[in-house]
Amino acid sequence: MLENLFKIQLAKKKIKVVLTGDAGDEIFGGYNRYVFLKNFWKNVSILPYPVRKIFAQSIDLFPLNFINKFKGIFKFISGSDVTFFGDKVSKFSHKIQSIKNLDELFLSSLSTYQKPSNLLINSKDLSNDIFELKKKLNYLDYEALMMFIDSQTYLIDDILCKVDRASMSTSLETRVPFLDKNVVELAWSLPTSMKIRGRESKWILKQILNKYVPKKYSERPKMGFGIPLGDWLRDELKEWGEDLLNKKNLESDGYFNSELVTKLWYEHQANKRDWQSILWPILIFQSWKKEN
View 1 (cartoon, rainbow, N blue to C red):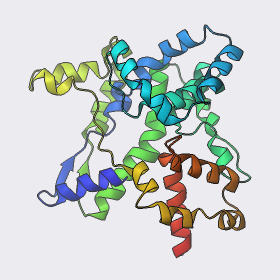
View 2: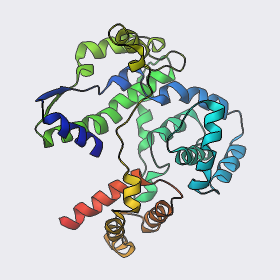
View 3: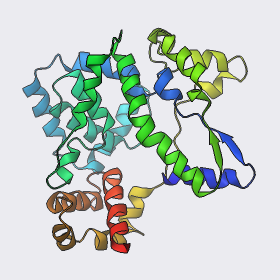
View 4: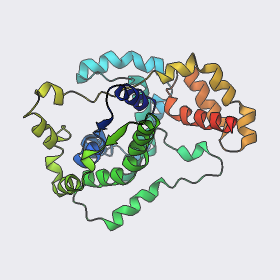
């Protein structure tokens, strides 16, 4: 949300209306999970679940800064430079020790925390309800199913929501060409092979784009506009965060699991894990509640 707001504030200085690329990933196969998830499960599921669980739990024994030391070795072997290497390895370990089928793996890829309902008191995890859609769909492949579920959930409840809020806060108009009725209908009429080819996502869009701009612009990896929020929570925002996540206040409020939230906060402060994406919404809620 913050990074979108920064970009929109800059745009507002010179223009009144902007076109966004939202929905392109959901209807043309742009997310990495569409490209790698099915094959990943095919390879991982070869190992029996108990073996996967023990292997994953052994990874959790090592702190984040120790795992990060192996980033260079991974880059040498794979040829890929992975940002936040240690944290991604840790998330990987949590996934393979908790998933038992492809649906669970997909659901796990949508969440930054494997058991989000544990963070709230007296809550029920309803995330599996999204698979009720499967019963009503005649999909040809799992990639298409993932794209459809994302277009009905993540796109509507997250992507479009935060862009709308950020743009309205600066009185900047936004338009979403990919959600034009004709474009959406065309996208869903195309076979997945025209969207995902090998390890390349949004294949057909790139073929069209390459007619107008050099390939070096379409073949680059995704580049998000991130901010060092994790570092801020360990430095400039540490005192603010500790005040809002005071254990006694959390317990008296009765919303959050104080033991678990405190554990995540200390793990983040010790640089054992990067829990910024979990802690930030809790902090914002606590801040809002304190002011109202």
